Length: 369
Image 1 (cartoon, rainbow, N blue to C red):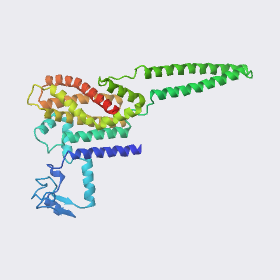
Image 2: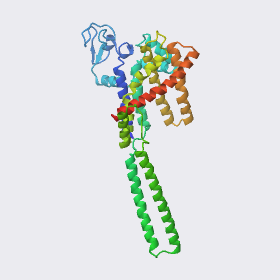
Image 3: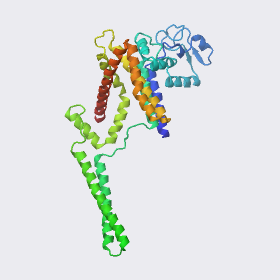
């Protein structure tokens, strides 16, 4: 359990660093020192006249050409500060972005689309961090699909071994009855045990028949792609090692979660295809911020459930909060009226079901090959 917790912490840091890679410091004054501030710091390398990276003259927080900080530090303290700074937060932009994302998502998306990029965490950076955080929290809390599943062949072998043991017990009981050494009370008790053993053998035989039918008669069939050889390959993998396939599904859902963005954008476009002022870029920002919010919401609800909050409250929150958030997000981003938002929300709910189905199909294909 301790190992899983450390791994989960590592995943959170990894997600933040990945998000940090697409969310540079440039444009946020809180991220660095001015040359004048650097003068007051010990062991700081002053670059008040030229940038140490590209030799461009500078007189502000950052180089106007490459964006490097003006004041560079050469202390171990500065090193650990940069590590924590890069791994755990996105400067002051986080605290401007998260409240907007939670309570005014439409305003956040609209302002970002219209050019206010330096004030807010970019949707992709926030999405990457939220996905890493979600899976890390799920792992730490033990929320995952079962991966220890015995294949059909293993189930049949286990049933056969159990049946053989019962048959041996049945023979021993019959030998005891035929020995002539038992009292009437012992004979009655032994006969009762023998009847139970016979019933168990019959039950085992029926169970083996059911397992055999499931393995051989196509109960394990899938129509994932409609392409026979691909679907047959998926079925074969599930029959041979269902535990491995479930593990691959979990791992791939984590690695390929970004596929939800290109899968979702065309469906959102269909809601506004006749409105030329809304471009594919607008829909991509809307989708990415929305996915980031949903991921963070699931993290919060998982933590509340782990903390003992009643299941009905968690369930109601999981149903109503996403719907309310999508309503506000649609209305604020696209400037819709109440009726227009409600109609599109109903259609979008159907689209979400299709998107999730397509995503799961992709995961199955990726897991099989």
